[in-house]
Image 1: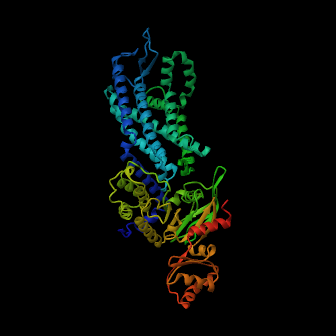
Image 2: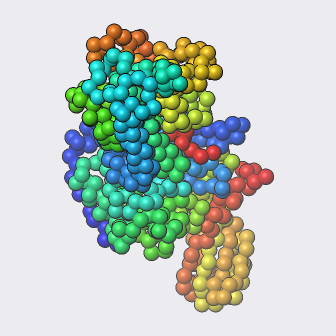
Image 3: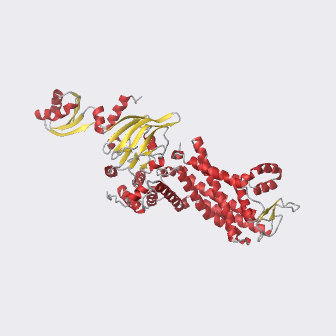
Amino acid sequence: MTQKKNQAVESPEEHSCRGSFSGNARNKLELIFTMVRRDISQIHRQGLPLLLLLSAILLTIGISFLVIANSGAGFGGELDITGQPWTVPSIGFGGGKSGIPFSSVTLLQVVYGYSVVVTMILIPAAFSLNYNSEVKKGTIRTLTCYPLGVFEITIAKLAYAAIVGFIFAAPVSMLPVLGLEKSVFDLFAVFATAYAFSLVIVAVGAFAANAITVATKKMYIQPPVLANLLVVFSFFTTSTILNLLGAALSFASPFFQAVGQLTPLSLYHQGRLLLTYVFGGSESPIWLVFLLPIALSVLGVWLTLKLWPDIYEKE
Amino acid sequence: MSKPDIAIEARDLGKDFGSTKAVKSVSFTVNKGEVFGFFGPNGAGKTTTIRLLCGLTKPTRGCATVCGHNLVSDPTGVRRHLTMTLEESVFYEKMNVSSYLKFFAAMTGQTSKSQQLKIEEAINLCELSDLLKKRIAVLSHGQRQKISLARAFLSDAPIMFLDEPFQGIDIVHRKMLRDYLREYVKKDNTVFFTSHNLIEAEQIVDRFAFIDRGSLLKIGTARELRDQYLLPRFSIRVSDPVKAQRILSDGLQLDECIVKGDEVVVTLNNREDVSKIGAVLSTAGVAVLEMRLLGTMEEVFLKIQQKTGAVA
């Protein structure tokens, strides 16, 4: 055995700093960064092939969709969306025999909707693959041996999803729409809004799942599951999607009109309205709606701080 | 307020899982600078007690302080002052040993220089240098156990919780690790140790605590517990065992005296007779070549179980 004498490389000031409030906060932040760094360095073992496949499919869909939209094939309205104003209704979808489109949307709705689809798939996918893998394998229990709570672990997993989601979603969202004769800044703003809302909804879902765990004392719904459900809910309750579904499935139109009452609750919907407002359109978001995720997040965070690491125990 | 020499203080600490009382209400203190052994049969509540003291699970009742931090109000603060190995270690199987140790060294929150030193120390201590590039998934049970211990040794925390640390470790390394733990507690650090191997534990543990069915049965040093629960028993190698048996049986109050090869095994009824053994034998012209105290902590534990009625 060749034991080395433990050399004092950390000064007493440094050590005591680790115990102070600011030192603790900094230490926790460092641990979160450490976890995120490890997860990113191990991305090839965290569902990378699936993320690449999803990205390739979404990119293909995006390019095909915009090529078809530009050619006018399959659409009942305008033939050329390139260079259209952001907020003027110009593209008709699903022309019947009469050639009258079921629904017409603006260029903003098309580009934002595409970004939403991309981010609503890739960000939750990155979050789920990472979080579920840790929980299923039980490695998350090893992390809890360190001065970390459920809150810090959730934040680290969200940070990973944010970074990986951005790396994959940004090119997939931006590349197909670069030929639209719009400024890159505008296009990026559209993507960034969709990305931010996707991330917010994933975070709200994750913390809400933790809040449910506090209430039920058992993790019936894992954070990625609720995050995915909220993302899907938020997407399918946008007015655009409800209109399109109602038009395409005319026999169920009353149903979609009824579900339309939920539209104000959709953050995606509000995201598009926010962009419309910014780009000079007449619509504006319901500002009150933004309080909902903030309130849910605050409540979720507060309750998450009350959780003990044994929620990750396998029973 | 925490007492300066006490590392861990549990007061009526208990945990229920539904209607099952895994740990009833245990109270004890663990001093700084000692190896505290926590022993009991399967399902006795050892691991649950460790999980409680590490702030991994919320106590149903009672409280504890670890390094002065209240377990209930500040579980994260508690974990800042300890390092641990769990009974069932779970690894990032696809990472190699080197990356694994680097990651968990970073998780200790030490400076990068300290981390590097700790990694080197852990690699040397657990003899992992040949395994550094190997993925954990391909390693044997014993090698994985060494990595689990190495991970715990990366920390500079003053308290170490080791749940069955020597399972699967070979004899040579057990000795090294025991020596390391003795050195560790010499620096006023504390080891909280569980094992099923009481015979091995005697070589390292300062104080023993026995738990069964969630109740703490007894705490004490090996000597205290032996004195309290076992009659003094010796194995004596002598020049003439048959003569020694006759002389001891005539001269002392014995519970038992049997000859085994060149030894006599003597169980005394009276502890004060211990000092007379040598004199009685030498007066009769029997040379005492070697004398060993018998009675393991396993026997102590069984006696305690019988006396406390823990055995159904």
